Amino acid sequence: MNNIIYQLTSLVEKALHLVILAMVLFLCGYEINYAISSGVIKVQNVLMLFIYLEIMQMVNIFFSTGKIPVRYPLYIGMFALARHISFDTVEGLDSLYLSASIALLSLALVALAYRDKLVNKKGPELPEL
Image (cartoon, rainbow, N blue to C red):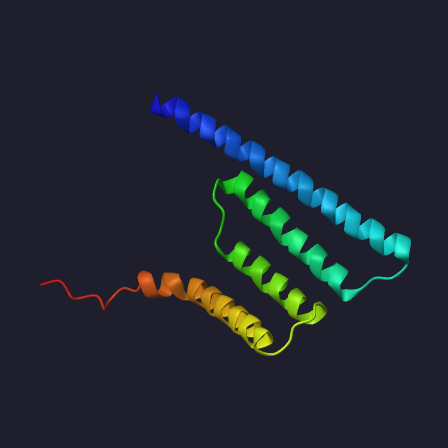
């Protein structure tokens, strides 16, 4: 019974990842169509395309490995916050809070980069007696 439930949830998970991929491809095409039809390529359009690219890479990694690396949502969050700060009206302490959020996400990425060195750090080898 557990095997059937696992297979069913795995199938639903894969189907939903395909739905996410289809939605991202649609949105990516919409951004490109908007840039072509308006005749203007803006930085915010490029940032959105980069966010879509990160989501597509995350889905691709899921289908190739069965896992989603934590760093991709962190990248997506950083770029979304940077886009929000750059192109939306942000005033006062909100800009400081958003900048601090980007700094925390950056620290999380640094911590992930060094986690293997910290967790798997071996002590000096002792000579055999």
